[in-house]
Amino acid sequence: MASALQPLVSTCILLGPAGHANLGPVLMPHPESSPSPAPPVVEFEHVGLRYGVGPEVLRDLKLTLPPSSFHFLTGPSGAGKSSLLSLLYLSRMPSRGRLSIFGEDVAKADRRTLTLLRRRIGVVFQDFRLFDHLSVVDNASLPLRIAGRDPQESRTNVVELLDWVGLGGLLDARPPTLSGGQKQRLAIARAVVARPKLLLADEPTGNVDDQLAVRLLYLFEALHRMGTTVVIATHNMSLVERFAYPELRLDDGQITRLPAKAARLL
Image 1 (cartoon, rainbow, N blue to C red):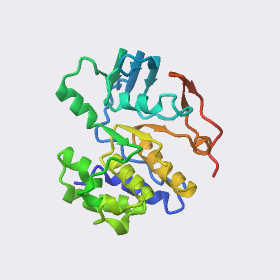
Image 2 (tube, rainbow, N blue to C red):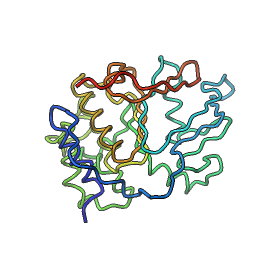
Image 3 (cartoon, helix red, strand yellow):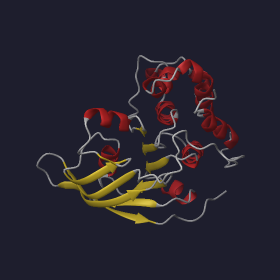
Image 4 (cartoon, helix red, strand yellow):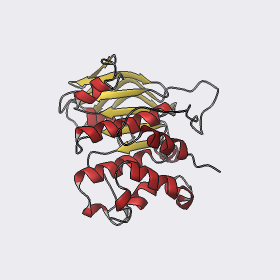
């Protein structure tokens, strides 16, 4: 049986070393796709977040992210981007309001339901959060193990993905021996390897050069075209302008949806 990872790997290879968006044939749908209407992937209804007894860092958020959407999350430092992402990957619960993920009200979800929701979310953290005792290939394969898949069956595709992000010669290396940019690419590979339904990335191109940043955005775009909802927090406005996707602009704890910038520069 073909691995669910294969369409993503094949698409990444089609993108090629130069990162051009030649996506080739029509991509296979996500394995969990259904002909029935799907609920919003994310829905905020008057959501607020505060830490302790301090003021709200996010205020009265009203936002809906439909399936298969792609948004950049922008705003000045301290605007609340990381706090918003922490709500989305269920590290924190809202102080008020209603947050639904995949149609589930997270305030009413039990521990098992929250665990299952988290397994459908891929996250690229700013601080990487790699396991130092595991090799590069084992770090990247970890979501497949958690999902109950046999990593040996998917190893070829995992290795191809790692090769595509420039880590093919470091499969047995441990994270402490990697540079910051290599750790970032490994964190990205781990986040996308299981083809999550929701992908969240916090400054995923902060430690790489501009050429590699564009290449990694094509990887996120490939996942998006196969049905994943993508949210990328970034200060890199040149990427926002290059890729024609809308913005979620955070400023002083409140959010504004902005239309896509100018069309992609090829």
